[in-house]
Image (cartoon, rainbow, N blue to C red; front, side, top):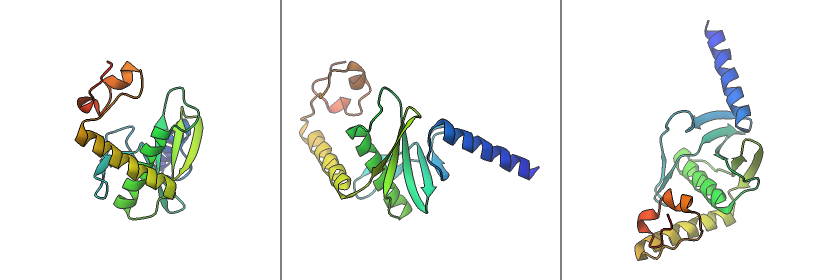
Length: 161
């Protein structure tokens, strides 16, 4: 009986990975089918929850799934994934060489967590903190839907929704 349950679970995990375009490796965390614990960075004072964490070649890799009309990595998605890489390094205590963006369960991109991306992540976090502190937050788009769901809405002085 135990073997049947185990094989059944393995089939379900394989099917889920295939449906979501997840790389090969062991899934040790997911935030998709049930709410999961947030990770916290003491260094940057940020929190976050990647969609999946996969262990491949003894490395924890964050995987973020995106929907919409995207077929290529967007800079904001890259920074989000970089934040997850930082969170995993601090919470799991190991080097995270890259994260994975999956668009529409079809297009998969390995995004390196290299010195340039680390630098951009730190600069972006510092800039966001400065803007919140000074109250100088401006809309950089014309999409009311983005404004309506924006985490910075309470600080923004030019809401278009």
